[in-house]
Amino acid sequence: MRAINPPRELYEFARVLADAGKSCFLVGGAVRDYLLGREVSDFDVATDARPEEVIKAYKRVIPTGIKHGTVTVLFKGMEIEVTTFRTESSYADGRHPDSVEYASTIGEDLSRRDFTMNAMAFDLGARDLLDPHGGREDLARRLVRAVGDPLERFREDGLRPLRAIRFASQLGFKIEGGTLAAIGPSIVRFRLVSAERVREELQKTLLSPVPSLGLRLLEETGLLAAISPELIGCRGVEQRGMHVFDVLDHLYASVDASPPELVLRLAALLHDIGKPAAKKEKEGEDPTFYRHEEYSARDAEALLKRLRFPNAVTDEVVHLVRLHMFAYDDSWGDPAVRRFLARVGPDSLDRLFALRVADGTGIIGRPVDPRGLDPLRERIAAVLAAKEAFGIADLAVKGGDLSSIGIPPGPKMGMMLKELLETVMDDPALNERGRLLEIAGKLKPKYGL
Image (cartoon, rainbow, N blue to C red):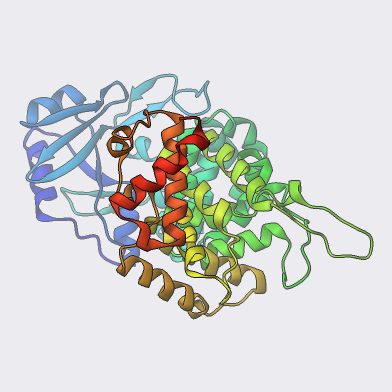
């Protein structure tokens, strides 16, 4: 285990409380991460000072969670979350304590925490580690273990089972047997947790070094079925052909092969989620999954909205899922390349190609050569370098130009702009104002103008 070595400013912060006769302990993830040699950027402290005493002791204090005994102190360039020692009562909603009572000792405070690795405290006055629940030993054993009775801990807070899996996935740890066994019976409590909190833990799991470790634990414990029946529906859906996995294992392998970026990891997890719905079988033949990308885009959008992902994330993931089945070959003419670029958009190209590589890896179970996409990359680069039109914004005419020749704003103008774009993608030389206005004039009768 590494040494705990907080910044000098944190000791100075603690000295202010010490001068007021109060204790101050670094707690939670910072202690754990120092011992593991990981980077620490968030600092949480626990103290026997009441919130009003903390507010009095420091100049700049934000009452971020004062009803739960927490304030944030801005001190010498640091944001330090300060919580008064506390014990908690029952959790009627499965997530938040019905009431908070202040405790008199750090030991009482640590006994209410979730896992032993998070139930250690570093005394910023004496510079000693307090570890009443064996957290340091569990770190050395690479083990996630609940403090006390795991079933009781999980029934207190329905998010804790998901946190256990997230920590195991992030750190490459195992979950202690009793703690793991308590997850299934706690799912009723888990279902009370808000979608936003589930989303936060799920995305941390997906951004783990090997996300399939966490995904398989989610499946094994029943949490995945509670989060996404659509994903569980992929288990046992065989694909044959070049595929060496069923659909769910294929998705797991694709996520592992994807770069650690949230949109890409989500797209890799969900790109074939619609295959069960699209599957068609004929006796003696391999199953088919025609238009599965459309089913998958639909199901991915529903799941991401249910989990309250930001619209920008949802839209980009759905966009990638819908387009992931592109099939380039040498027969594509330049207009086809331009249309592909118009459908994908320059900002999504790198992600779509990364998804294709991850998908290929998930099909055969070993890395594929990304250079297979180089011919298409080169042709797209040539289109971009030539500054050819592949979107309406690239046309040499705008709405005002069309209005000047008697084409009013509205749906007909929009349709005409799309037709002009198609014309220009076939022949980029036509992207000149005069020539496009001439073509638009000839198109007017087609639109009843």
